[in-house]
Image (cartoon, rainbow, N blue to C red; front, top):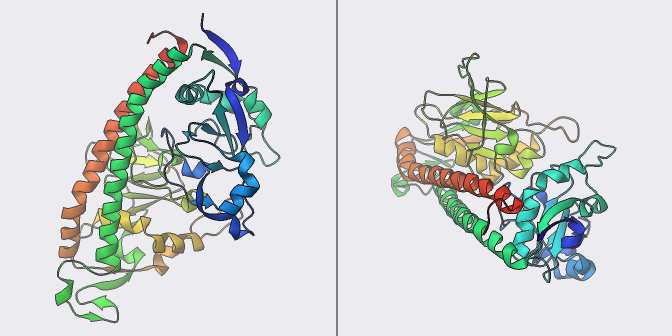
Length: 402
């Protein structure tokens, strides 16, 4: 018998992260990635994109909290039981994260990651809460969680190798999705921000507006929260807030239920309107429905942005991801701290340049294939995740030998 119940703290050294004070900008730089829960993506093995980095000066102060490559960082404050990441380089994490640095004489790094992934639901059971009601698992409670681990290191390595084959394919798809989305957004900025669209050299520009274009309030250029018919007696896909990505258009996770909340269809853009989801970048493009006449519903905290028939749904999504628009939306937020929401008047106040229909058509011909490739890759990744997740409990329990 090589499987035994052990505590998370027995797997290695547990480190709780920290956040340098913002009043000391010299602690922020580009030397060491600073990974926070908002940087992590549910279901992703590694975290390659992050908003901030520690400086060398911060490293000197916090070096005892440096996380080496091969550690598993688990979110233990906030949305616990959902996110973890495997560190691919030396980095730091914030105070909402506990990282397990494996004792490599006994445990394989990658095996520890999959073991903790398999037992992520246990983190929620250790929630001590806080006066604010926010989910919170202390370092001691996290370290004291018990899991059943394989003690034979050769077996650990075989289990990890089997599972990582799926994750390697998923990671590759995610890199391709990122490149495709960057290409679409770059083209948007080139055509509609820099105004270097095909044939722009021959078009006269007056007061910053090319001939044939219009400067309109966004509420005039697109539909905001349009009425979408729904049969309340039937079940339709429902998209929760957690299904929206903070960095990608992909929307594939949903459940079937009777329609409630925001209602939308293929080609619509979903914009999170509440803090911190808006600031974190939660935005999605709907293209997962079987037909264009079908509908879905989702969180009441979505704003649905729809292109008119003579517009471009892909332009709407790229606009919603554009830094200028997002900054304006964030500044428009109203309400009490912690529950601020976008003021819908922003769509009346934010001005956009809209081109003739022919320019939109040309833009769609270029970027629509990119959006379709992204959707295909996302579906492939979902199938790989399902296969991996079906194997995970069988390998961890010993029901399937390797």
